[in-house]
Length: 411
Ligand SMILES: [Zn+2]
Image (cartoon, rainbow, N blue to C red; front, side, top):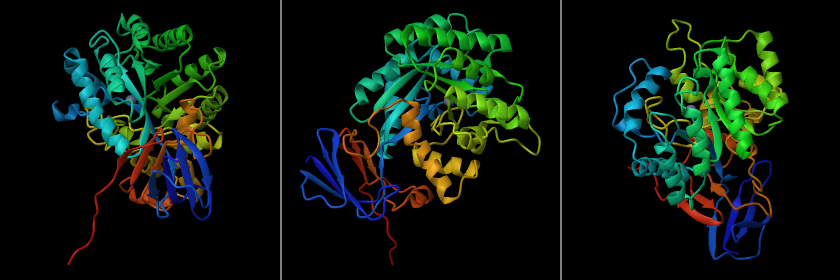
């Protein structure tokens, strides 16, 4: 065996388990394995998870907070505005280098799959996309990377963006992005969604849009996205991020939309920490939180994930990035605190994300891809509570990161 991980605590199993890895695949999962590994890892009762996901990350903008002025209003429109100047000057090599700094941090925290959003539009052209494709080329041995062609300035609002999106897919982007709520009118928002579907169908691609990321409860693009997904039979191939307008829907309308989203097989990514920072900046008290109705979605069987979204950029000045921090955040915001709800939260950065990305052979079972994290805490509860340094991170059967820091009381 290449690696044997011993004494692992696995979700849903009592006692500890050994995991044998060979040629990038999990070869055996047993309570006690007699085979020896060329590398032996003692998990010592720690929780071992399959590789973590970050399904929504604007890596082209990450760490711009180090060089640009703060977002004074804290709103999304100002964030979009102050990023424009930087985008005009984007150099793909610089974008890639900056992205890799954050990817490296994410891998150390156990992330084995990233979906990176690259701004595509007439301001920056394809420079951000080329930067993230370069990052994938350079850093792909540490993690899986998908690149989204994302029209950050809209499509109707940015004539020429549709052609650039098409070009970005031809150059190697994997996923068709979208931002329909940002258009000026409902008609334009629907046209935006139609154009994204045209491109997705032309190249047989999945779709990941930022939908109704506004405090305006009348924003209606999630409704149309769900309808379009059903009509085009793109079930299971569409993810909608944010959808914070749903927080302000009346309950009857919300129930209809939750049902449509479930029927369409749309995944919802609730990136709670971003919305807590950016949403409801125009509200007086009490302030809404811009959070989609997570519990209602879960109850209806919708696939819900949570993602990092931003790392120190004009939208959000924090972000380690760490999927366990994101999971802890959504547990707070959506009030998911019971034992079975903590399991639901952990699913969001593991199996639910894998389902959304249509990743096959995922999970700790014989024959699956050997992407594992030795968390450094004994249970899901403790992992979310303490978010410890990840002791070992294994990608495609190879150890790619480990924690060597110790911390102790002295004196
Ligand atoms: Zn985003």
